[in-house]
Image (tube, rainbow, N blue to C red; front, side, top):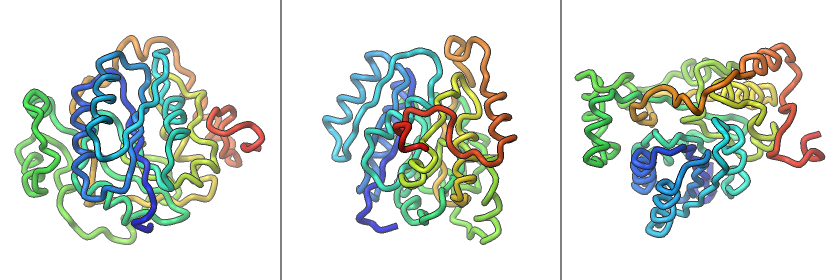
Length: 282
């Protein structure tokens, strides 16, 4: 991908401004500066809004804020809203609890290949380490890779070998070429033309679960190959409890939605989407 192409980074968040502040700081520290940030905000309160406004005012990188009313977990919907505001040829999706190393954008630019989307890895930080760096607002994302590797050796994160610049085999790069499994949109890069091809995320997915899998499966069915990035630039996932009770209450139809999609091998458009007007999705 040309260095002249703009990249859009979509950061999904909900009411955790302390974590979001660290994520935005890690994006400010990128070596590759030709990108924009769109915060996809699923109904956060005033503290998050004020943080984003202040960050945008002081940022050399453009930051925009897409906010939607808090009606429970609506990740597909908020990502589509952020995508409408984006201008980049390539979109990188991360979450508001995932810091990135200074070469994150550069690595994704280097890996970007037309006709492909790129899935990267996620390293989970343990509770004790997360609490320490958040309390002190430590820019640990700038630590040398060897120091980050040491976190794994001392039990403070998993997947420490993702920090080492090990050679990736051709087989490893394409081992999930036609598989939706073991992929999340917290480290995912997709060309805008391919997002438009599948009409974005399916907004029928509400509450948590399988919205990312649906998106990735439909990309594959649309003829977009999956490229698996190892030992390059994982996201650094801050520890938190798995669910917020009031955001995940009630029954979810996500499992049935995804099973229906799997059973219909010809489908790559969502049954309903706000990302494109109906005539463009036909």
